[in-house]
Amino acid sequence: VTRYAKPKTVGEALGLLREDRWRLLAGGTDFYPTQGARPVRDNVLDINGLAELRGIAETADHWVFGARTTWSDVVRAKELPPAFDALRQAAREVGSVQIQNVGTIAGNLCNASPAADGMPPLLALDAEVELWSLAGARQLPLPEFVLGNRRTARRDDELLTAIRVPKWSATGQSAFVKLGARRYLVISIAMAAVRIELAGDGTVARAAIAVGSCSTVARRLAGLEAALAGCRPGSAFSEAIRAEPLPELAPIDDVRGTGEYRIEAAREIISRALTEATGPAFSGARAA
Ligand SMILES: Cc1cc2nc3c(=O)[nH]c(=O)nc-3n(C[C@H](O)[C@H](O)[C@H](O)COP(=O)(O)OP(=O)(O)OC[C@H]3O[C@@H](n4cnc5c(N)ncnc54)[C@H](O)[C@@H]3O)c2cc1C
Image (cartoon, rainbow, N blue to C red):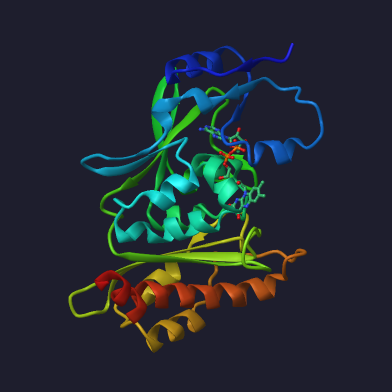
């Protein structure tokens, strides 16, 4: 017999996860399209009754996004520092407003699509996920959680309860650029998130760059990050991007674009994101 449960507390949910196998249901914006018109034959654990998992909180060391936090919640979260601008820009570009109102960041990560728009900004913020089971909690950095196309390190009895961003990473200025075949409601051909900390002399003290849709899992670009350190925003950025082989990226050819095109596109959108995060438009927007 197929079961449906909508627990009211995390404890109750973890008890259910221990006793049976379930498919978790959050906003359903990946769950239902994956299901299609077939009848649901798995047990469904609906987490939409878990009020404690919704919202953004600030602790001494972290910014904590409860698993049920929606993209619209992120768009509205004015308390987040500029390091989160990339995540906010990504939130505005996930599907449409209707999708953003119910779709959750946690669902985006658990679905583990190569084109998940939440991945690059969260990678650039060194985010980690918190997973709970009756055995206790564990935290995994994002690259150790999302393992491949539709594959995560979540165990069957675990619930992703929160996404945590350490405050030491929540610094600097950031931007996100998504390339799709049209402006809205589109799966990314490539997307880039950058987070830049500038030193007192205006050069780059630290760069965090992540690109999605150009590998099975979105990746940080360590070589480019190292090459950008010490550069002054402007033409030095473009030169560093041109010269960098981007070994982390291995894009495939598909209906949305060839691998070769994706690499060229990645270079261009990284460059645009860097300009946006560090350019005059940025300072102007902050001053206003
Ligand atoms: C029209 C449309 C447009 C879209 N556009 C975009 C887009 O532009 N960019 C983009 O990245 N995505 C897009 N998506 C995909 C989707 O909206 C997002 O990935 C969204 O963030 C998924 O969140 P959800 O809460 O709806 O997840 P659900 O569909 O409820 O769940 C997704 C997966 O995660 C699991 N899961 C959910 N929450 C948890 C949890 N707390 N613990 C453990 N497992 C969990 C579920 O079991 C399921 O496998 C689009 C979808 C649609 C239908």
